Amino acid sequence: MKKPIPDKRTFYRLAMLGRFGNVPNMWTSFEDYQKNGPHFDQLGIRCLIPGDKRFRPFVDSADIPQVLSDLRLFPGEFILSETLPAGCHKIQGELSYIDGRLTFYHSFVQRPMRAALEQGGRHAHGLQALALLRQYADPADAEMILDLLDEYSCGGVIETCAEITIKTVPFGIYPNRSMIVWELRQY
Image (cartoon, rainbow, N blue to C red; front, side):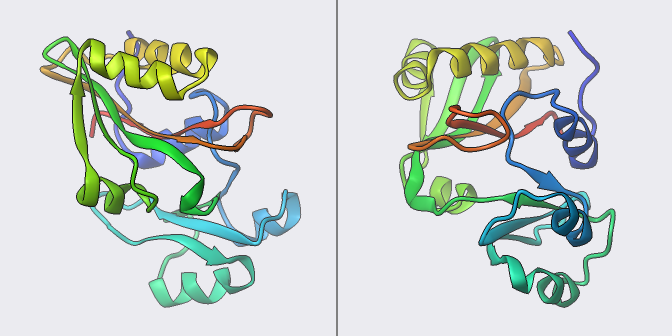
């Protein structure tokens, strides 16, 4: 059991170091993105300020500086990330242990995760949750996410939660992988 992840800022810092499996390509500034690439037509903007809901999943890359200015987000307050159109999702949601039992709050709706869960979220527990994960994720991804949940267990009634999306196409920092870990949290 590792020390719990206290906040989004810590998660993204560790994710960029490769600690949580397949994550989207990410950058800490627009300048970093321009300098280091790879380059994409669209990016997502994720706010790192606790409780802040400023999030833009599909922003044309050329518009990023203006959108950051409009959102009043400054370096250190956001992450830019690779994104794919919502139509590329197989399944997405929040995977966790609740009272020691695997739970998958998931959706098949083709929208960004928050909207997809609000519109079509369903709960699967125990073997049903495990079966869904194994049906849609490749075996290496399923094993990896379950290992991460075990490794970052915090020992509470509600354990660590992994926000994941399983895509229909390879995506993220690892070639030929289709499951993305968006967040691993206890906060």
